[in-house]
Length: 243
Image (cartoon, rainbow, N blue to C red; front, side, top):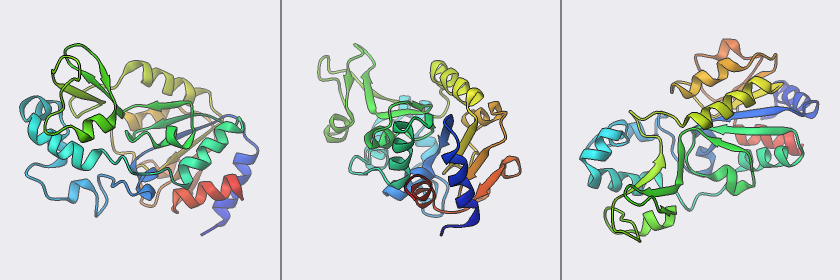
């Protein structure tokens, strides 16, 4: 649905050339990738252990077989394609309007859509490294490997370059994200509940007057938004970019 708020967002985008987008799982749900907290999200699916337990550093170290059974089944969505939101953001960057994408997602769909400046604060499933020799392996190698993935060179354990619970964020990625937010004139936040820290705290670095929040459900930051849109992020951004 194209609302007056959506038309206003289009006007803001048309008149801006220094936009930063901050997104979460809701950006990729329209590509068929489940989020964590919705009714049909990963937190509400039944496993031997809760997903937040499985996706923790301690569980990875102590229950590697169960970790990889879940990880390959639910986190490696390698057939997913970019949706209207990903494509619209890539076009905005190509036009020189969007300066950076900061994403909590690990699926790589922004890059697949053509975006270049993407700060993946929770890492990516497409980068995996050997804990012994450091050799990198792609996501398809991890998906196809029977059982616990091992390095093709030395045969030792592989670890995804994703930030598990109990692990810290990459400081360089955080610093680049903060710089982008501090220096943009418009911050669009989309598809995130803004409940995961420290990532959600990044938006506190924005000091402008065009803070846009696009999310179907309410968040704790709704009252800080200059423009609040509760519609499909794909349809909203597609209209704003392509008319």
